[in-house]
Image (cartoon, rainbow, N blue to C red; front, side):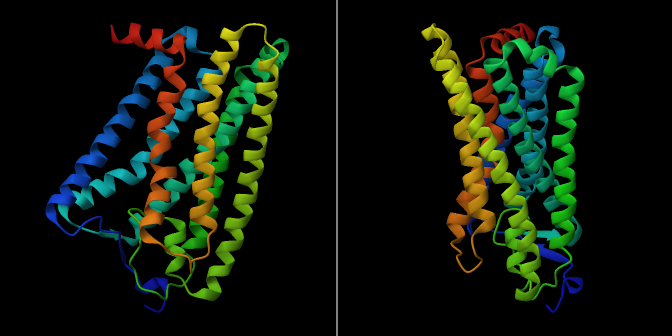
Length: 304
C-alpha cells in the first residue's frame, strides 16, 4: 500500500489460531473487564453518595476511577469481540478513534496521578496550609487541567500518526490500535516526524514522574518523623503501592513507545502493553480502597 489513503481497515493481532484458545482469551478478558467495571463503579458510587467523602483526595480518586473505566473500555471490548467472533478487522476510522481515546485517557490519568501526589504532599507535609491551597475550586481546576492535557496530547498524537503515509501493509501487531504499532507501518522518512512528538511527550512525562518521586520522598521523610508507628504504617501501606503502580505504568509505557522499531519481540510487546493499559485500571481501585478504612466503611454502608 503506497499511502494511508489506500488503507480502509487494519488487522489487529490474533491471540490464537484455535477456537478453544480464542474462547479462553475472551473469558479471561471478560473477567478482567468486569472486575475493572465493578471495582471502579463501586468507587464512583461510594464517593458520589457519601458527603463525608467529598474531600480533595476522594474527588481525585473519583476522577481516577472515571479515567480507568474509559481506558479499559477503549481496548478490551474490541479485543473480546475479535476473540469471540474470530475477526481481526477494525476500520480505519475506528482505529483512529481507538488510538485517540486511549491516548486521551492514558495521558489524562498520568497527569491526574501527578496531581494526586501533589495533594498527598500537602496533606501530609503541610497540613496547616492544605485547606487553603486545595479548595474545591483549585481541585476542579487541577482535574480539568489533567483532562485537558490528555485531550490536547491525543489530538496532537492522533493527527500526527494518521497523517503519515503507510508503506508496510495494514497488520497491527497489537490487540488494539497503538501509536508504536501504527508507526511501524509508516514510511521511514515520515516516521521521524512523529518520533519527535513522542520524545517531547515523554520528556514531559518523565518530568511528571520526577515530580511524583520527589513528592513521595518528601512524604516519606515527614512520615519517618512521626512519633506513631501506626501512622507511619498507614501512610507507607498506601503510598508504596501507589508509587509501585506509577513506576510500572511509566517504565512499561516508555519501553513500548520509545524503543526503536527494529527491536520487535511480539510477545514481549504484548506483555508490556498489557501491563500499562490493562493492569492499572484493575489495580488502582484495590490499592486506593484496601488500605482506606473510611472508604471501606462507606462502601459497606452503600452495599447494606
